[in-house]
Image (cartoon, rainbow, N blue to C red; front, side, top):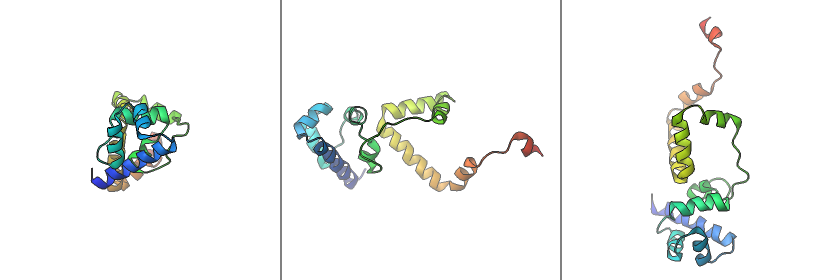
Length: 142
């Protein structure tokens, strides 16, 4: 990851800390990291540990999409899963494993999403064809 991206992530971490009106010491303490780690994270010199990022998402309702990519809103507002998404999750053990990894490792989620976005761009016709309603078997045979 390039230096510019690290600095941008650090700036967003500082915005979060200031939003809650916390000192670096208090913010670091609540995230379970040293103040120096928090300071270095805000400067873009290092990433916060995965546990701290998970705490931001789980305990503070901070969108890791916003932290990592600067996309969307800073806070998650009542996330819900649709019935279709839940059905999809129950289709196979591979999907269940993927969703578990994405839940336990939020930055993994963004790697998967980045891969999908590249795939979708490089294979736009394939994706569009897959999204078209499929004809019933009887109609396709006719």
